[in-house]
Image 1 (cartoon, rainbow, N blue to C red):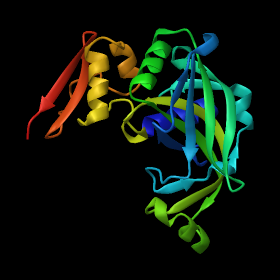
Image 2: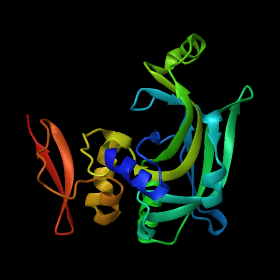
Image 3: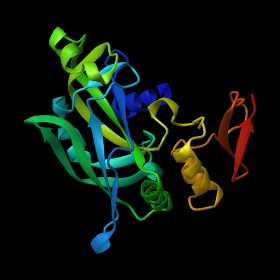
Image 4: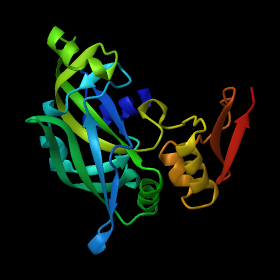
Length: 242
């Protein structure tokens, strides 16, 4: 995640003394709409779940102005032209009891090979997204906030207001902690991803860009784990027994 944070700081001109964060929302309510010539993915972005930094980013605190002026959707928090795969067509708050609890996001996918592969992944297993943001009001939770979000698990901080900077695709079931060189342990969803890449349904290059595989073999696989690497353009499954 540190590499993604560094890229965000550079791209959005955020100083080292300013806070910046990433919150992932993996595989929630994903739809693919190809009716009437559309190439759209509809996904829930940001819910009030506890993220990997043990904080909750409140959906209702979002300042969407910058993001909606830009609207670009990228892969793995990469900001070069080749990593821009779509644009936000609609961004609507999900309200429960008058409170914003999530953002329903409709993304129009570009006519690119990697965008084609993202659509295939979304249909087969769901797709993850993560938000790059600049927190503007945050701190330890109050007693009321601890009580309100007690069912979410342990958390140390609440981001009450934040500036939405960008939205990235990430491969389900990887989360933001394991993008750009993911170690993928076998379960039903991961086996589905295995089949997508090994059967040639999606390209090895797309799998690498989305953090589904490692592009180097220098890192040893943990015990009882399966990972994928790309060697000479070929996808290879590597399993290390206990």
